[in-house]
Length: 207
Image (cartoon, rainbow, N blue to C red; front, side, top):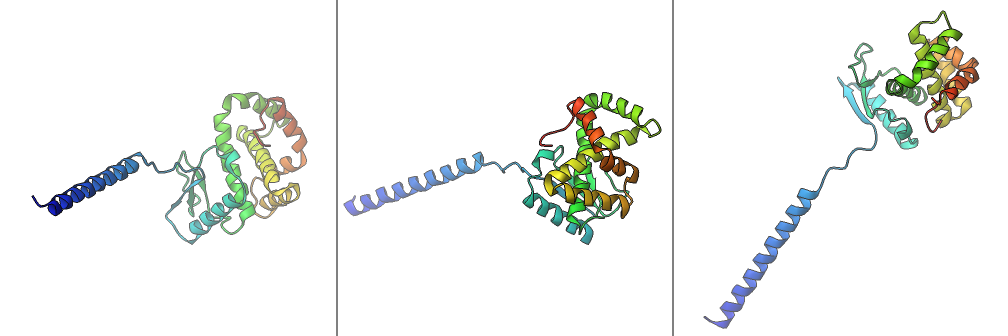
């Protein structure tokens, strides 16, 4: 066999071996690669429209501006323009506050604290009993709502400061007519409700 041909064949074999080694390396790398686990909110639009799109965009913007992770009691958020479309057990937001970031933040926090109460039912029992004594005429759900709205107000203050938080809650109460009795108690008897929750160690971090 001519020496040139032999050298050519050796080079060819070396190149093929190198090629296969590269392919094996890529295959191993790909097989070991995993999609990163999402660390933020998982936002899904139900029957997408302009309202759901704006709400999603503004919620994502809030997530970029603030570290919302301390209140991720659930990370999945559904957004729907239909006020009657609240698929259980997912957290669902309507599009009422699509263009009002402060109120959208309040709405998201409000729903997250519903999830927090579900995760702390046993610890909440004595607090609810004491609230029944303080507000005997209020329904059972009203007592739970006092806790949720109180935490919502505290979390808003954590992000926006007390002044903006109070303004947001006032707007929700007076302009949007949302939970007027409950928000009034939160704004005017906040210290009393907070003292009761502190008594049972029910103020979640970082509040």
